[in-house]
Length: 229
Image (cartoon, rainbow, N blue to C red; front, side, top):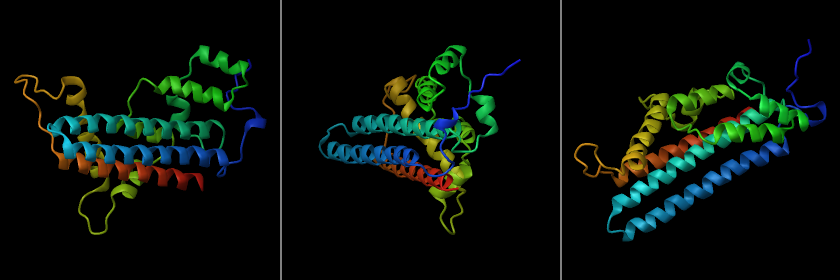
């Protein structure tokens, strides 16, 4: 009985090296983060100088920051999966076990020779309704594309002489992001019982932004390092 070969056809394979397509996609992700993060910083700092209700500005900042960070995580995971599909990266065991593709999508792929564009469209549909901004889920996706959470944490937070564990700082940053964001989008920042506003401080938002920027920059470094292997 014949089996269905889901690998891209030979003519679409690219050697396992840094290709222009990989570089452009990685640079696009990096540039998107840098540009949007800079806008987020500058625009909200301007608003904070003039706003009478600064906490509303800070809450809006957190909601946008969460969305931007989640988007970048999605793009990084999809970049890794497409590289595996095309044979540019070594496939992980999770790639074969955790990635589920429907029969309908397989039939679509058969019509267009299982191209990278088809696979990316499958990933877009798979990931467009789920958030990756929860620490366990994020680490699961890192494992899917062969990225070590420890390597990311060390790249982001390692400081000589520091007693703080890098993975703890990584985890705490993501927990803080969710702790700040969830009451904003689900409860209008109101306590469930008292219905009073949950306070938010400018300093904690600034610190969170600094740490999330460290994480994204670390991810870019780790992926670039992987591409150069």
